[in-house]
Amino acid sequence: EHALKQPCLHMLVGQRCSGKSYLTSKILAQAKKEQTFDIIYIITPSFNSNKSYFGKYIEEENVYEPTKDSISKVIERVDADRDSWEEYLVEKEMYEKYKKNIKNKHYTFSDDEVIMYDSIGFLDGKKPEWHYQKEEPPKSLLILDDCLGSPAILQSSGLSRIATLNRHIGALKENHKERSACGLAVIILTQTYRMQNGIGRVL
Image (cartoon, rainbow, N blue to C red; front, side):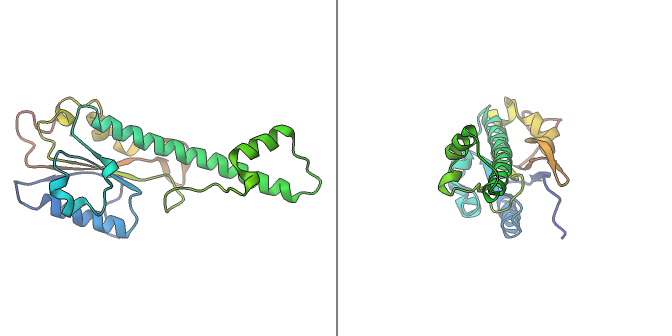
């Protein structure tokens, strides 16, 4: 009940060996317990060194090297997840209509409907399934670790977007309860932000 409301923009600042990765792992452990996030991404050059902290929570396919387009790639995946959610809602609505009509003895399916339902798999017993645990728009977290001086900070086209608009990333066509977007929570681990080529003013 005292958890920070997501999606947040967090910055953990501390000198080397001060426990930034350890603290982040504790945040991830609590988030997993409460099912806060459906998927977690990390941009870092040192994932293998920090597997003891992050390996239990982050799949290898969600690890990115800090390049100038790594943040944009993560945002693209958030948008793709949003598209999957909205496609699921459309398919679910179609399935409800299909079930209703198949129970109606007086309803006659058109040829186009039969072809459509067959292509989706309804005629073979397939039901729409959402691929995350909670039936709601997907919630994502991005961690940036050891990225100072890297293209992910200095040349990224997506850094300003996550800094100012992270709550609005993955905008939904229709609001879900109080949510108008999937959003992207962000945790930035850094040794300092007061340096040349450090964390920019927008952050």
